[in-house]
Length: 96
Image 1 (tube, helix red, strand yellow):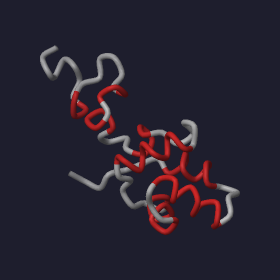
Image 2 (cartoon, rainbow, N blue to C red; image 1 turned 180 degrees about the vertical axis):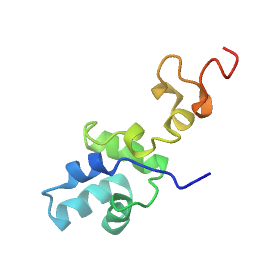
Image 3 (tube, rainbow, N blue to C red; image 1 turned 90 degrees about the vertical axis):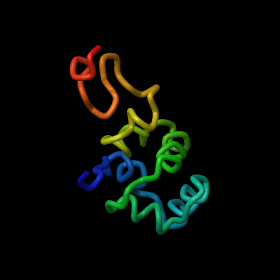
Image 4 (cartoon, helix red, strand yellow; image 1 turned 30 degrees about the vertical axis):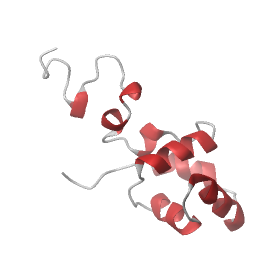
Protein backbone atom coordinates (compact mmCIF):
# COMPACT_ATOMS: atom_id res chain seq x y z
CA UNK A 1 0.00 0.00 0.00
CA UNK A 2 1.36 3.44 -0.90
CA UNK A 3 1.79 6.39 1.36
CA UNK A 4 -1.39 7.57 2.99
CA UNK A 5 -2.63 10.90 1.75
CA UNK A 6 -4.47 13.38 3.88
CA UNK A 7 -6.11 16.71 3.39
CA UNK A 8 -3.71 19.26 4.78
CA UNK A 9 -5.92 22.10 3.54
CA UNK A 10 -8.41 21.76 6.42
CA UNK A 11 -5.65 21.70 9.02
CA UNK A 12 -3.72 24.48 7.29
CA UNK A 13 -6.82 26.70 7.16
CA UNK A 14 -7.62 26.00 10.80
CA UNK A 15 -4.12 26.77 12.04
CA UNK A 16 -3.45 29.71 9.74
CA UNK A 17 -3.06 32.96 11.56
CA UNK A 18 -2.44 31.22 14.88
CA UNK A 19 0.70 32.01 16.81
CA UNK A 20 3.15 29.27 17.73
CA UNK A 21 1.79 29.42 21.26
CA UNK A 22 -1.80 28.97 20.03
CA UNK A 23 -0.80 25.99 17.86
CA UNK A 24 1.02 24.51 20.85
CA UNK A 25 -2.13 24.96 22.97
CA UNK A 26 -4.28 23.21 20.34
CA UNK A 27 -1.71 20.40 20.27
CA UNK A 28 -1.85 20.04 24.06
CA UNK A 29 -5.66 19.87 23.89
CA UNK A 30 -5.24 17.10 21.29
CA UNK A 31 -2.79 15.19 23.47
CA UNK A 32 0.26 15.85 21.31
CA UNK A 33 2.99 18.43 20.81
CA UNK A 34 3.09 21.48 18.60
CA UNK A 35 6.02 19.93 16.73
CA UNK A 36 4.06 16.77 15.98
CA UNK A 37 1.02 18.76 14.88
CA UNK A 38 3.21 20.75 12.48
CA UNK A 39 4.70 17.47 11.20
CA UNK A 40 1.17 16.27 10.42
CA UNK A 41 0.53 19.56 8.64
CA UNK A 42 3.57 18.90 6.46
CA UNK A 43 2.74 15.31 5.59
CA UNK A 44 3.20 12.95 8.53
CA UNK A 45 0.31 10.51 8.83
CA UNK A 46 -2.35 11.65 11.26
CA UNK A 47 -3.21 9.01 13.87
CA UNK A 48 -6.93 8.29 14.23
CA UNK A 49 -7.00 9.57 17.82
CA UNK A 50 -5.43 12.86 16.71
CA UNK A 51 -7.86 13.19 13.79
CA UNK A 52 -10.76 12.71 16.22
CA UNK A 53 -9.36 15.27 18.65
CA UNK A 54 -8.77 17.80 15.87
CA UNK A 55 -12.34 17.38 14.63
CA UNK A 56 -13.70 17.91 18.14
CA UNK A 57 -11.49 20.87 19.04
CA UNK A 58 -11.92 22.61 15.68
CA UNK A 59 -15.70 22.25 15.80
CA UNK A 60 -15.62 20.23 12.58
CA UNK A 61 -13.39 22.58 10.57
CA UNK A 62 -10.81 19.79 10.50
CA UNK A 63 -12.50 16.44 9.83
CA UNK A 64 -11.58 12.84 10.52
CA UNK A 65 -12.47 12.08 6.92
CA UNK A 66 -10.22 14.84 5.65
CA UNK A 67 -7.29 13.74 7.77
CA UNK A 68 -7.63 10.03 6.87
CA UNK A 69 -9.25 9.95 3.39
CA UNK A 70 -7.81 6.54 2.46
CA UNK A 71 -9.11 4.59 5.43
CA UNK A 72 -11.63 6.71 7.35
CA UNK A 73 -14.48 4.32 6.53
CA UNK A 74 -12.55 1.39 8.01
CA UNK A 75 -11.67 3.33 11.16
CA UNK A 76 -15.01 5.10 11.60
CA UNK A 77 -17.79 3.06 9.92
CA UNK A 78 -20.29 5.72 11.00
CA UNK A 79 -18.72 8.06 8.42
CA UNK A 80 -19.30 5.64 5.55
CA UNK A 81 -21.73 7.01 3.02
CA UNK A 82 -24.70 4.92 2.04
CA UNK A 83 -23.58 2.36 -0.54
CA UNK A 84 -19.91 2.91 0.26
CA UNK A 85 -18.24 -0.39 1.00
CA UNK A 86 -15.42 -1.49 3.26
CA UNK A 87 -11.84 -0.97 1.94
CA UNK A 88 -12.99 1.28 -0.89
CA UNK A 89 -14.63 -1.53 -2.88
CA UNK A 90 -18.03 -0.76 -4.27
CA UNK A 91 -21.04 -2.45 -2.73
CA UNK A 92 -21.43 -4.39 -5.97
CA UNK A 93 -17.85 -5.67 -5.75
CA UNK A 94 -18.59 -6.89 -2.25
CA UNK A 95 -21.65 -8.78 -3.42
CA UNK A 96 -24.22 -6.43 -1.92
